[in-house]
Image 1: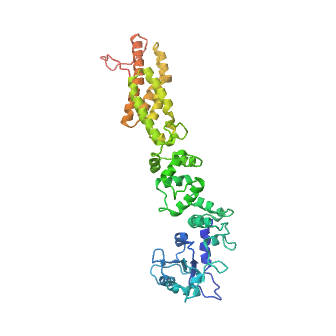
Image 2: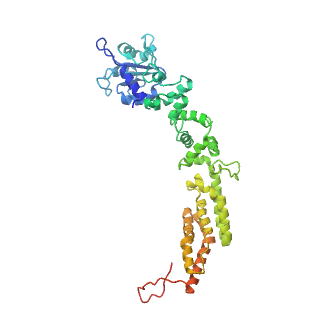
Image 3: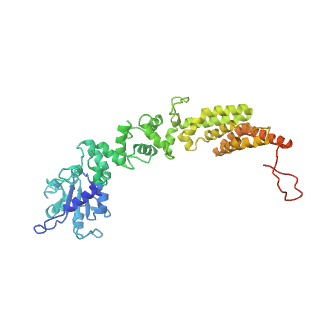
Length: 439
């Protein structure tokens, strides 16, 4: 697998080649880049080219320095700056064209020490004697790659941001495609939904990652009709909550996550046009869920004042009103515990009383369906981890569960009293045992 970065390294090495029978070895390869097109590739190139030197402010770690320092480094007299003997130093000059170095008299004073390299060295450039531009190197018919890259302003701007991502992809993957601005932006920001949520959440910004943000902003303007460089995060969340058109994809990504705390906070400031909105978008608003939890808590606490029959009817009514909240992102984030408890309370409300006329029928009814009452009661308590929620659930259980328990217990006692329950014979451990405790 080869990449454009591999091709660039090979081309730089090729620029140092010479005819040993007719020429002297070049003292350096002069790489002029007036447009600074190749700058984003420098960190990756330095890892593979220890002989790469760069014109600029002194930075020994990056092998960068002024012209006089470059002259000294190129001949190996700078401590710590070295490379294999078989390699020719490459002098990269960002912002400098080869025409600038052609005449010592016209050359800026700070660059004059480098004019010698134009005589004793060789240039890295196109076969027509011109310096390579990034687009030219990638797309020229007489270049090594021949990629299809349009020559327009938008594409050139996107290429400058996506160059590292593009140049580290396999050549086979890049050939046969038209790498315009849209394709290049998609390389840098391939997941619009995740990028939008990261931007709202503060993980993506122009300061943190300028290239990725620029690509993201370009795609967002086209796909979501939203410009993050001009509009606010609250504006974005307003559209997120409405989930219109492609914003639905952004919502789906948020809905399937448990993070994005800042997105949740921004959503907390939003509310539907009407609090009575029963459209599919109501689940996007945490205010509605919070209001639902508060209303449900109050309603459950009031059940203790009702008869068991009326309490069961009220619970089933509440279930119809609040069941939708169990399918929301807020329930999955643990913010709708009472809506979850309500499902078990509704099951308990629909559990029939145990038969009282026969002990076998009572036992069979409990084994078949009656056990759901006990299970539902325990599950409803477990659904509410906070004390104030457990108080509300307990009020409901006192209204519908305790009467069910009491009715079953009394029925069993009457059947025992009438001799209609046959207990297994348990061998006593002591002759003084007078009571058998059944739980």
